[in-house]
Image 1 (cartoon, rainbow, N blue to C red):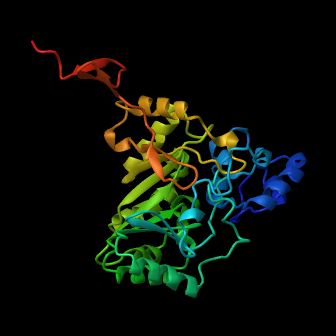
Image 2 (image 1 turned 90 degrees about the vertical axis):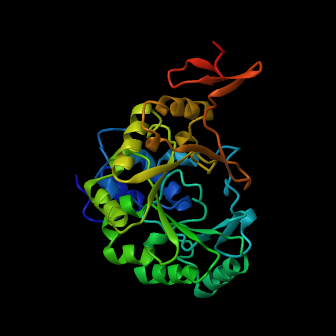
Length: 351
């Protein structure tokens, strides 16, 4: 069954398309009443309906497991609100800010850490007045070196609206870098038009595009073309990945993804440990498993394929790298572990 060029948003539509059994309708409607649902055709066409554990479906098709909220889970798991001096701004680190232009996405991930803040029932985009207040905040804080456009997905905005924001940032001398966080190149690749790509570029600033992608199958031919349009225009591409149980938590799945990214000129950047967003425990791994996975990647995949494994500390305390350590003290020297698991003293013993 092929979805006919539409985004599925309701339990009834998901059941009709064969992504959920009819007996789950009540539970799925309850999930949809709490958290936004949107499954665009690009992802719907990738799902194997015969596979009850399909890694694409696990990311985007709602599940009754989302109704199970654990005591450690939080509505604002990474503490955005604690660091938001004005609407649309999150200023957690001294030299950079998030500028949240919209609360809307082309697809709603079932593990989203902002799932309580995004969706069609939330304000569509910052009002003109709110955007100007956010830009005024950036202008008045000369320690801000980088602005990260996020949301929601900033690329769902029209090229005109995006261009206006980029031009405003271009006029702020102390802002040197603009980073755009998006899922659109894989969720709705046809929307990465030449006009939108031109709107991303501004003179005098380094502009990076960080694409959220979790499985190699998301890099369809259309998604690869969208990424190529950006790379060919001179936009450096990064990838952000979330470690997800049943999606990419095996060495084979993660290695396939990282290599597929590098082959498309997309540098793996962060591998995020799953945040404590409500109703997402079925998709989270434990840190020991994540560290083991990183060890398995080390030495067996090119250094270009190695993301930094990070945890966003709950409560707004920022990201910290949590990858495995290969170094330990052994008396007056250090013991270093190689990619085969063997230990070596450094400096080596004298001959």
